[in-house]
Length: 524
Image 1 (tube, rainbow, N blue to C red):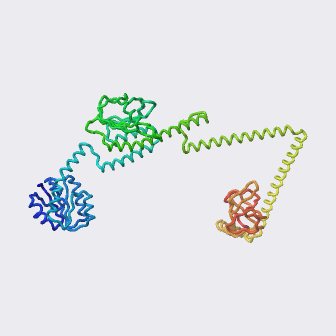
Image 2 (cartoon, rainbow, N blue to C red):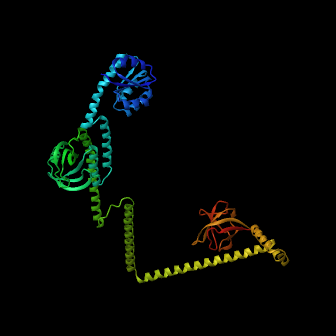
């Protein structure tokens, strides 16, 4: 067989051998390309029957050149000849699509046989490809690709729980997988009657939900046998909702089985006579039917659960809720119910206590009631007297502290000097102010700050910043408070102490009310 051959010279030392001893003696028309770009150009314009890639070394770059040629000229077979290379790379080249890979040492007869075998097999390959295009034969690569589609479509159906979404997704996924013109899903009812729940006609973008009872003899046979069926028409649509007036040429019925029982039938149709459903389409739809049956079962269980929940709420509360309170709404509802129960329990306890008190009062004699009232009156009088005595004691302590403070200030040297009118008039007003500030700093020292005050016992919590002890006189000064008192006792963690140091917090009973952030000074 004589043909046109392009030789791509990839730094090969066997170019002369191929031309002089193989190709020209047998009458082959030969073209030589110096690089890949020239080879692609000749392949597009010269339409050769074969390309020989002559390389010095069979390497990864040689395989890359072949992939480039294969992507641009997929219909032209390629033979690789190389002076050096490994068997592993040769096997990889064959797996990549090379028609033949010949390594040195090789003879002219071996090369001639490889060329003739490749040129002889090329028409058969073209005929097979034409048959695949005309008869829609599914190649192994397409089988693997559609198996991945089945898994992805099945996951999308199982991921939803709303019945309408599940039904429409089943129809859309089946039509996409089998490249059908139309499709529908029938749920099995009682007897030989079925109900169309979703369908998509030719030209529609999405499947639509339906609810129409139909009768179909073929579907009845599929339900009774539990086996899928592939049928060739023409056959009119028998359903009023799907009736379009045209005939369909090819039909495919696949049952959906759950718990060994057919629950639905998936129906697909093609109008064109030259587009039949293949065996691979049937296998893919049978696999998809398992996903669809699981999705329908999950959706039905979810609907039953919602219905049971609504019935239970209607029984308990006497009203049917709009929607189940999931998440935060459910927790809020539980809290409201719990609070209502607690309130009812407290009301019941209070009423019971009131009844018991009333019964107790009815059982008592008038004399005992009078004795109890007199005792209560005496206790109130004692409490009032104790409060008056406490107020008087605090006032006395405050007056005594003021007297002591006045006496101490009178004994200070600068206080005596201030009594002299000459000394007082000798200092300017600014110097008097500075001198007073200096004297207050010398006389009093900051030893703490009030952090809290408890009004009922009259106790202040003081954060100590310098050492103080029992017997010291302190001066508490704030925005509206300014008084002195002597420390009679102080406590740390309910334990009486004599000395408090920096960093400790003490409890001290004060003679007047104080506020937080009031400052505490040590006098003298």
